[in-house]
Length: 393
Image 1 (cartoon, rainbow, N blue to C red):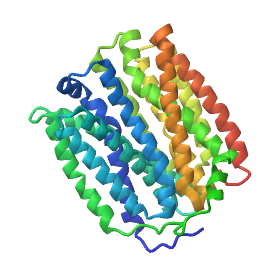
Image 2: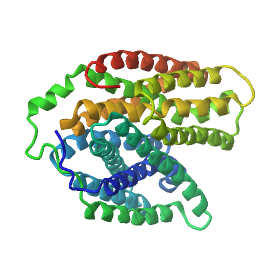
Image 3: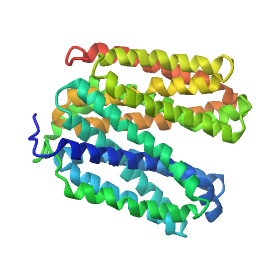
């Protein structure tokens, strides 16, 4: 189905990038201020654990809801409502003294963030036309703004914390986010593809579609590997490699910077190279990064995390590009399904990492990464073989 282009590509694409920037800030906000929340509300480990579980739960809910909404209603409403939910959650964190309201605010931020993440990816896939390389490149460039938000939030908090409290900074950032929300309100977005509602049978078919489920399974392992690296690297570096905490955080930032920089480079590469070749090379780089963690040489941890960032950069943009190409008429619902599968992998594999490390120690970290990467590679090869019969990869 071809969308009637009565909108400005540049304005819509810029809006999607601003939305992804907001999601990058959302995903990192709790980790950046958790010590302050623990002190303010006098939380024990259980209370802190509840807070950290609410954000991914909210993102999961938002990712589940956005797809059917954008297929039937305008992207404008999704982005505006999601932004307002995020703003409300940030102001709630900044001003509340009630623990229940704090928990609700964190859940709200997750819901808004999950919806805006899925919505912006689906939006960019829709406006990129039928050219698969353009879609892949645009989705990769969109991912750069996630990295900018994820890196910028702790830097901003760190710089301004000399002059203001974290809660004052969060309140001010929430007010600043009103500006992109106004932009979402005033520009024209593509019309919904299923304005009168898609038949329920079509959505049910997606849930049972082997190709879509395989694409979701790639993201299951991709998201799980990214989550394990983000959540467990600092502990591994401190415990097994003798890093001090500050240097371990710097090492983790190397992963995020390399992931972001690689996605920027991919916007040029994907217009010139076959996407399946990029994915296969990315898998090789990912394996190389894991091997670097296992074998000691000078600064091998930094090299490993940089290679992991580069290797994992192509996964989400290219898989989502395939989804947009295979399911153009129900892209929102299809995106929603694969992103939920990906988030489930993040939550489940991190939980498994916690269980295993409690018994065998954090030294198991590289081995679990290797096992997940092997599974991801196998599913990727099977999936590429299957979808190559229907689309040009």
